[in-house]
Image 1 (cartoon, rainbow, N blue to C red):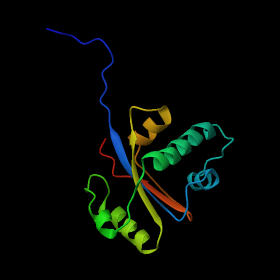
Image 2 (tube, rainbow, N blue to C red):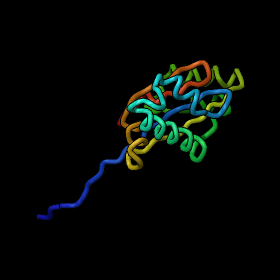
Image 3 (cartoon, rainbow, N blue to C red):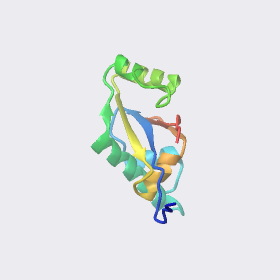
Length: 132
């Protein structure tokens, strides 16, 4: 019998969508999540903001058509989220999808294993349909 004594990982990823007229900015993010940047969890939320922004910029995929939006599996995005994507496309907004990984930084791992939705006047993020 063989026994493995080193670290064993069950890695995961979570799809999310960002919808907006503009790139995510720090001020809008903190206002939307209701966290004081200088408060006790401000640094952690700043790291999460940085992960979201970097992931969108470096690994994001633009969803340009309604057909593209409809092509997502129900395990990635719920029908309601797909409808939001299609409405946003009609309105000329940016619709970007990407993924968080549980194998990266603490901030990204927290985003990956959390189910969340952020809706504000300036943007919408949904990582709700998490099957981690």
